Image (cartoon, rainbow, N blue to C red):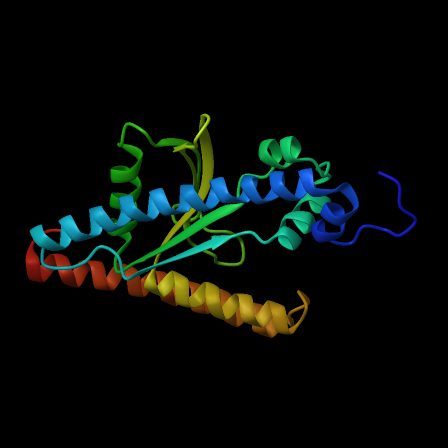
Length: 221
């Protein structure tokens, strides 16, 4: 590939490389969409079955995200990944993302247990920021799981990043993200301190609500 202009987006890369890469990139991203669809269906089944057998839903809402070509490029450059399909597949594990928001902390771990126990799902990485919150107060359970996607010519194991958190954790994370975006990452110390206090308050709320539910219903489930 020869060009005098710098490649600033994956769209530029595709245009400079020809139709084959265009087709390959489209198909590459498609497998991650299929993986999102498969995991979303599994979550929906677990949710409906649980609601039928219990007095509450373990899931408040679910959001999905597929990295855009531009986001892929930004991530590749950040980690020094070559701009090839093989390298993107090997080095970037969060192309497909699902966030599950739950009422209670016990629901978070229940979802991990139920999904991880399915024969076609492999849990390849766990980062438990609930048990060990980040320094800024961030709390969430992060998983990388793989699921088989059946294409017309082969079966591929596709990674999906799964974030599971409570309503309180999700609210805190949303506010924290908007504040850091507004200040371009350079947040005044007073605001950082208040965010830390708010994170502890959110954790206390989760603990209190779980205790109240146990007192009323006699079980954490």
